[in-house]
Length: 227
Image (cartoon, rainbow, N blue to C red; front, side, top):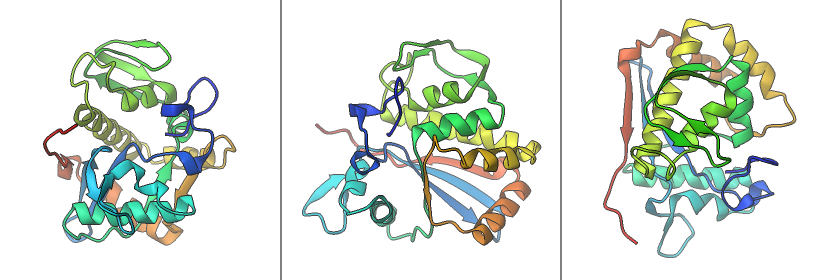
């Protein structure tokens, strides 16, 4: 939830070390069947975090380390525990600026917005088909309490998966957009943390382009709300 001037994340955090992982998505790739599943883990999920006494919020597990990279590994371990021990091999984390820049790099997205909402900086969006630029993509994936429908974190994770699937579908149909996105990654305005190497990336891309969109699964880990 790190932003920039005029587009800050929650709490106006100014360093990555203070930030939380407010959107956690586990991507499972079945290399044998050629299927891909997206599994959202709501940010407020109470979980076991290695090295922390008692239970802790999922989105704050990253703060229980001395560096962002170590914190992301801790998030992977926490997600693994929540999913019953399934090993999380790789991670990729981006800040909000990266979503905006990468969204613009692929020319935005034509998208069926499923709820009217107002963004954090008071931009109004309406339900229905429209073209969203990078800022619009970020606003849609970020909105929660200002949404007219499903104004909670479960609803937000659903919007995030819908947008990810729409972006995947566009890039799948226009592979050249990958090169544009790769060029945008070098921007000084964004930050990406990952342990995915080029060989892994090529392997993942090959499966992704061959995957039938009907074989793309969308799930969320749910549970009772407590306060």
